[in-house]
Length: 139
Image 1: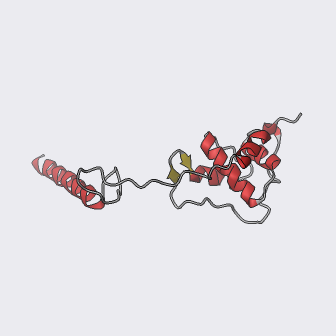
Image 2: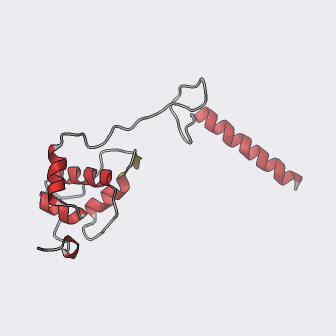
Image 3: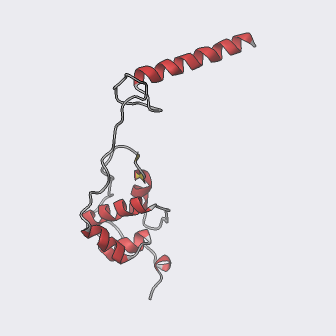
């Protein structure tokens, strides 16, 4: 039996040609880093450590692109049987991204950064800059 780590993955390319792109515009959704998934798929001799959710997403994307289960198991260093399980489990590729509202009480606008909407985030940044300027002027 051949150990998968010893196999070179230079022969593995998408059958339809080109790169496989991830379906989400965000770089991360929940526990999936889509940049790492895309890199693991499109770089044949690159060994990137992926968590289980990322391996599952990568294997499903590769299956859609026309890879065989054996090619996927070689590329991602997972068992071929696991790829077949993921193929037939019927679960979606990833959980749809959840866009929570602003964390400030009484505000239901979508969040921008640090759990706050644009208005609250900008007001906190302006207050921090103002405090910094006052400290510099006092010094």
